[in-house]
Image (spheres, rainbow, N blue to C red):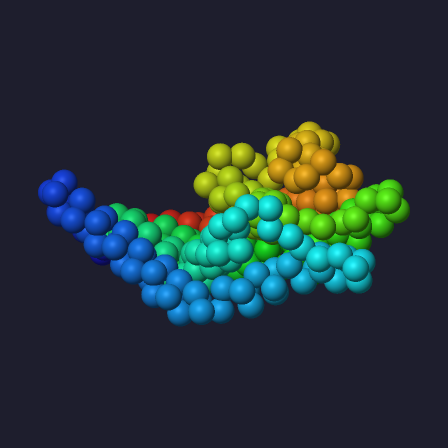
Length: 260
């Protein structure tokens, strides 16, 4: 029986210098991709900021608007947002470069798992940020702008707003990776699905604590992060059991085929 499926593609190994050169090449390709996307988006920097600010501006009183308290903020804030958006858009290519560097050292069976996991992690990260923008932002900003005293005009600083939304984007993007982490724990047999299921009460508490730490100090955004995290954990349990069952069936069939 051929052993090619059980050995890495680069079974002879590479000198350290070649690995470092390959790593540098991957990093340069990733940086160039971000730069090219940034150059393409920079002329639309103000429009991008208007798009990101729309969930808040929708609920601002007619007599108020967003403000800039720093002299350079009207330029620097859209600049920072465009850079963030460039990394966001180029993320699939960045992950591809990471895969190009790491892939040759993996076994073929490992590649069969890593590739769909990596693709799923990208989709889930984008789904998390989309959930934050389309679901969380409208609810949070409607709540914030409606509970303030009538004598206080809501005029948010654009730099503070960017910090606020990027923090939420990051929090929800990372939180939506929970199914991937859960599946990997089960598939690698580091923890069984049954043990993880028994720890459900602790996981729920952890989700709410993490929601409290990763979001602004308001109940709405904390709940909107904690509850999806819990549901995503349950989804990870389900698909983890399914993938482990398929892995065990495949191993059994291969073991049977090897017997004389």
